[in-house]
Image (cartoon, rainbow over all chains, first blue to last red; front, side, top):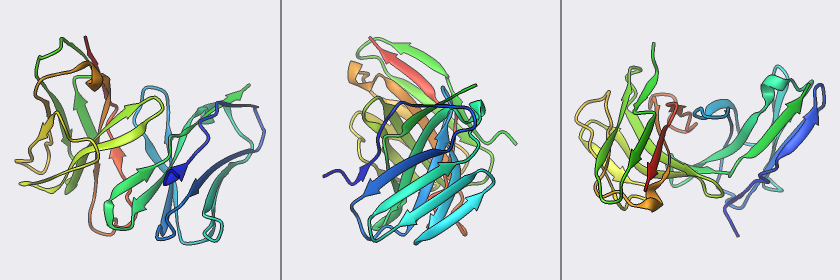
Length: 112
Length: 116
């Protein structure tokens, strides 16, 4: 079993749709949960991070963590064409917090 | 504030050639790292450094060397390029204080390397 699983997509939605992006993980020691966004031909940039379980909201974006199910989600409300990118989940390695465990990324296209 | 700057952006090499990918950051970050990104494989850590004079191996260090003589610069050297090193390479840095457990990385725009 991979340490992190993320459906690569591609996911295509119409503008204004609610988007749900998900990752599952196997290491119960993970405490920080991150979402990075990567535009085509650019480096990833941190979008949001959460600590432990629960929800965190930032504008149109909501990050959700369910530690009991080892499942994290990123919701995008009122999606815009500018949200078209690859979204990667990432987890600081519990044994070495400088090493991140990455999902493969989900490619999202928001169509006008 | 330029952030993380990588050069060159594109490079084509022949098998066996050597080259250096440059990375510089102007944010006074102690931590710097190199990743490669390949389709179906995701981001994989090559080498990282927690400060000047200190480097360590990541997941896929073979065929690559690094050094960290200054806080600002972290070059990645390919000793004898192989087609398997065709990839997109990203340099990333982070600030240690207050960020040690968040893993918030600042990435450069990438260097696209093709080895023929």
